[in-house]
Length: 227
Image (cartoon, rainbow, N blue to C red; front, side, top):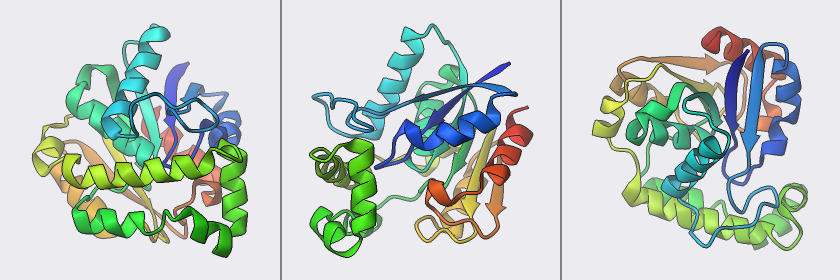
């Protein structure tokens, strides 16, 4: 049975994959981990950066005696997987990203940071604030959000470049929901053409949040790509 690592997105946790893991149980041995600071996992002293999260994946693999593994990464988790493919190519196999933002600049970062105002979320989207509190803890979720904003700021300067994407030789599936308002068609298609061995898939009528992605569609695409 194939091993498959599931990596969550920014502000997310591995618990968001619980139903998906049940769906995949007959075909895959699935694994999931919380990045530090997420899902009530204590924060490391280091900040939230893609590089640090990539090293957390490597640490987990080493602790579990896993040399190479296929990865499904949602949103930020997909970017972590691509970072690993670029700088630690021998540690990852095939990569499936969903809703992963691939273009980063100061303008793009500022746009994302504006969405990460905890007080405004409490005021205007209390249900979302409560869901974050449930995932990360009543006292912790605002810290997760502020550290994520700093990560977005860092990405304006430490993102994967065009040349980095060109050097990735792994088989990659870049998927984007047709109703995704966070990740553009243009940035996904552009990256698809930079990668040597990639496929670009539009999931019709699918929005960005992982909770709103139909499990049957996701299961079908995972099985098609990895098996």
